[in-house]
Image (cartoon, rainbow, N blue to C red; front, side):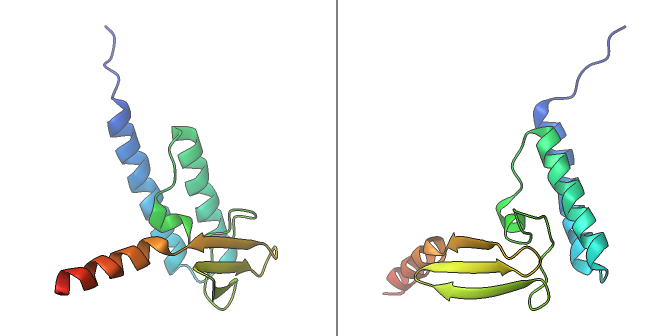
Length: 114
């Protein structure tokens, strides 16, 4: 008798939950090597499931070397011309994220007040 396959949506939910657990472990970990290993595992899970890493976790590690970022120890954060610039101290790679979304939300909240 053949077994029923679980759907892609349920598999994505399981992988998403595992990714969240790995990033929470990485954030609570004091050993940098172990935190980097958790990030590597989470990225590998997402690649195997062919799904993107959620937006809130993308800004917590270096896309170039995979280092988990702890502010002041492994990353330097600066604001430059509508962008948040992350500088990885382990591989010396810059990552830039625009903060247009946050500004747009702030403008909408101000418009609602009036």
